[in-house]
Image (tube, rainbow, N blue to C red; front, top):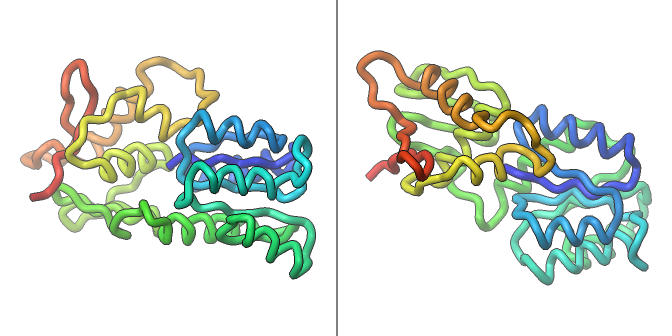
Length: 226
């Protein structure tokens, strides 16, 4: 899943970004209200972490939140604020935020609230994703196949989760990079092929059907259970 963080404090933004990435999410970060609006208009995100006090627009994060809601009624928005006042919290929720965190906050709580919002999102699918004997639980970040535990890195989990959420559909390498890596990714070109190989090695024992199939010239697909 891909998240957008809009936070003008560079130090806080970096900590939030690293925390979310360690949680298995691809993360884009911008530091002003106009940049937040522009990023959302250009890219596709699954959740937005939005600071309240942002430069560049008259009401800062409130204006960004309102604009996002104009474009998308369903995407979860977690608002960050240093102002622990009922009025500001109400204003943020009225502007379209789904939840808020008051600074300073614990990073484990940030991750918990992100997971909770993603689970509640209207576009979210079943809590546990299943296909070809694999069960993937986004809430606990765990995976099994035919009852055995599969230990995945955060990036492996992100790639497999996106493929399983789109089971039955061919997903191109560029689409996987868009959703499992951030927009500033400039790594090696065969990174998707490498991670698909890692996943196949971990998911498939001798005699088992290969869960991730290659459609040459098109991408990868996990066949949905019928």
